[in-house]
Structures are given as C-alpha cells and as structure tokens.
Length: 349
Image 1 (tube, rainbow, N blue to C red):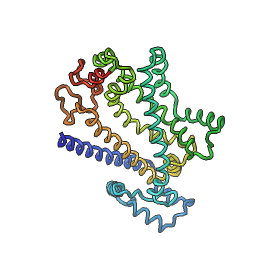
Image 2: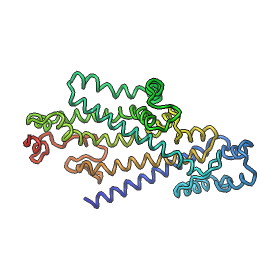
Image 3: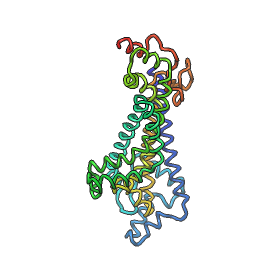
Image 4: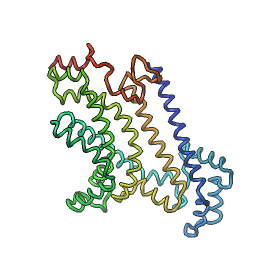
C-alpha cells in the first residue's frame, strides 16, 4: 500500500509540474502575440527615464532581440529558479515587489478560506439538526443567496455598516485586524456557498442510508450522528471543491483588496496592467498557477488518506471509488457491517 501511494504521489506531482509549465508557456505566448511591443515601448517612454544603455541591457536580459522560442526558454528557466526579472515601471526586482505584497494577500485569502469553511459547516450542520421548517426552508436557501451577491457588493455593505455606522474599523487603516476580518468575510461568503452545497447534498445522501437509520433507532442523537458518522464521508467531495475554490479566492482577493484599499497583489496587478509591466504580470500569473495546482495536488494526495476505499491505481476494486468518483462520499454497503463504528457507538449509548 505504501509503495502504491508513493507511485501515486510521484505521478500526481509530475502531472502538477507539467500543468504549471504549460500554464506559464501559454501566458508567455498570449503576451507575445499582443499587437505592438509593450516592453520596448515602455522602456522608450520618456517618463520612465531609461537611458539607451539601460534599454540595451534590459533588451539583452530578456532576449527581446532573439527568436521567440529563445525568449521562451530564457523566461522559463528564470521562472524555475525564482528569477522574475525587473519591473519596467519601478525598475525594481519583481520578486521584491511580490514579496512585499504577498503577506497581505495571503492573510486575506487564508482568513477568507477559514470563514468559508466555518460558515459552510455551520449551514450544513443546521440543515441536519434544526427542525425541518428552519433547516429545509431557510438555511438551504443561503448558498443560493451567497452565490447571487458579488463579493464587492458584500464588501461595500460591510464597510457602510461596520466602518461608517459602528466604527469598528477605519478605512484608512485597511491592514488592521477588524478590517482584515471583514474583508475576509466579504471574500469568504460567496466561496462558502459552493462548499455548503456539496456538504448538504452529501449529508442528505448519507443520512438516508440504512446505517444512519439504525444509529437513530439505537439512541444516537442527531448531533452525535452528524459529528461522528456523517460529516467525514460527506466532507470528502468537499475537499475537491475546497481546492477548486482557491482560484476564486485568488481572483476575488484582487477585487476585495481594491474595495477595502489593501496593498496586496491586487494593487500590483492593477498598476502593472495600467503601465503594461509585462514581467510583473507574467510573474503573478505564474505564481497563481503554482498556488492553484499545488493546492489541488494536496487535495489529490489527501483523498486516499481520508478514504481508504479510493483506488489510487485508477482501477475499481470491489466497487471502491476512484479519485473524483461521485460515490466516494457514500458508504459502500447499505447495511451496517458488524464492525461498524455506528454499532459500537450505539451499543455504548
């Protein structure tokens, strides 16, 4: 089993590396086919103050006088070793610019992810333990409501109520703890809707199984049934959805930073787009691809650990699910096995 998992992990890691490289190559060619020469035009802009000697050195560094494939190879090798070049706008290393702004964006995205997970679990928990009138009618409508409201609208409402109305934070201090919290709430609410939808659907399926009915008949409360026997199998598909929402967190953080006036990757991207600072844009896109692929890789690697029935070789054995199988969240058998944890829990009760 350990050898199989090692081969599986190595195979998935190799696929992730290929995806990142292809994403970078695609971005490079998209930028290369743009009309005109934004790099040279930016360098020769009198407002930037580059001398002819500096322009020649930068052109040689990026290989702009070389064929396109040579430029691609040079750009790709620099990206692999962490050399993102020099900003054409500020004449500073791109790595330094991103390094200064990255902590703010990571704090916002990490907090938003925590808010999304907690909110999704609370909604899913309420749909299972509250009376039907509240759980079915009210809480189940929350994910649709969260998805229909853009995060910048939520952010403006939070600023109006909690900054201008209650004075919990000041918009001139967007990096404070309260400001970060409300920015994370604005970003996390739409993300929580997707996770909650998956959790609710799989909880409904798991709670309708025979082993859940047996557990209830033996005296387990709905809360204990949820926490001990329904949440784990129902959460497995949510791991995949959680990994996919990282892209939404990265994209939404750019808008949220602009709404709350935070200085993060979003502000760097805005300035780079306005000034056609292509090295900065390409570095940000490449790093975003790395983060997205890395998170999805971790989700793939965690799936066999969370559910031993997952076949990491890609073949079904004894009806077990493969990674990404929609049935992975449901127990294999509708009957309660003799060594079922539900039976042990119920016998104690």
